[in-house]
Length: 94
Image 1: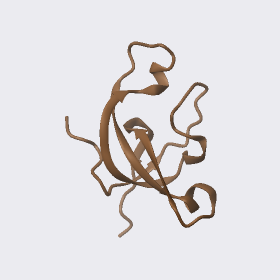
Image 2: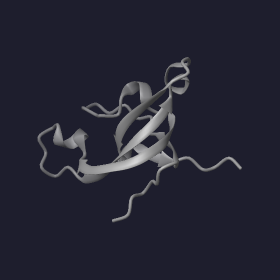
Image 3: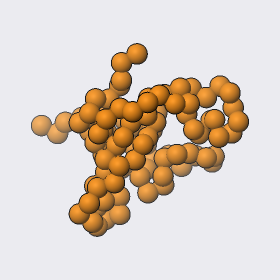
Image 4: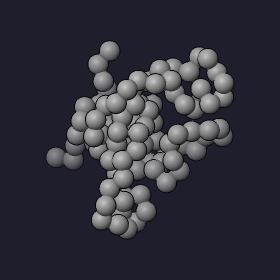
């Protein structure tokens, strides 16, 4: 199965705040980033943390965020490992 997002793809995280565990940090919800690289496939932590054996196995991506996009300031970047279902592609603004 091919990766949904290639390195360099502009993405945005989903803004939802689920009532259960999620590996999508609150500070990164609804924020734009860029895929650095696809990593490995892993069971979706949101469901596997609940002890569920039916957690889907998804591609995990390293995604780079500008600190200023996350916290309103900073000249550095932050890289997070995020499951595919947390991400949507952002169309080019050309």
